[in-house]
Image (tube, rainbow, N blue to C red; front, top):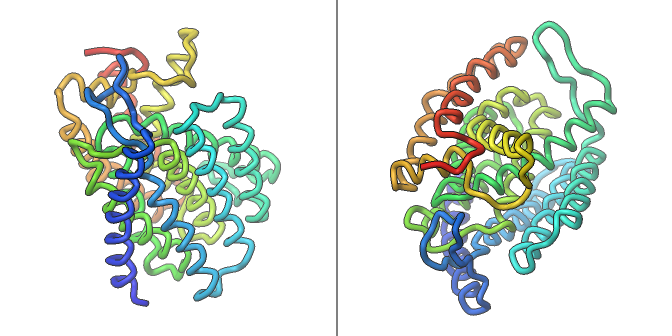
Length: 336
């Protein structure tokens, strides 16, 4: 099957499945009712992201049957499934953090074990090579990434657009590297993300839910680990591609923690949420984030790929203006 045929098939399947799960969510009353912190004013069905989870499972099966990808890497990809399962349960019953986080860490360490460790990370003048430290940092990063992606799924189209952008850049970066797995996964997430956005672009008719957002954040982390292991991308390229989400979520939750607030509970004090209230538009904020991604972060990520010893320098150059922008929109404090 050609990549074009695969892309079109996945897009159509995603759009149809998302529409189907929207109807199912309405039928079983899986609805996000607006509250004081909500960015929407009317009830919206939840769980549309399960369509992407299903297509991901089918892609893993496809890779297992039709490619020569090592079995340990296929088993690594399965680590996303329990994360999605916990997310789905959370959509139904609002699981306590003491149930969610242990499963997330178990999935993270399973993935790292299947990978056989984490490659060294260059900090320009020195490299971190200790296997145990790298493994612990990788597990923390995976769990943090899945949770921050969940927190950043707060306005129409934002999380889906980020998924499409990151994977489009990933595909461009690895298309000539021979990294077959990353190419197929990128095609999957671009196509399924676009299919989901048919229903989620402002004004949204369905939300992805925790089943989708936590799964996507964790899966992007797995892709980062795989690309580092294959030598097709660097950690700093990934930090830059995900820079907008990393800065907003980390700064917001850090400030909430310092103020003694329950940072892990739902809130509406992210910079992007404040910006949406300021401009009274989800679409404007989502498009602005996409423009920053495409014309600021993507070129710097490419430079970080071409000059790997300077990757951390490009990351700092790329993220500093985002920190300033997040502070401008009062990240960590509900405003506007």
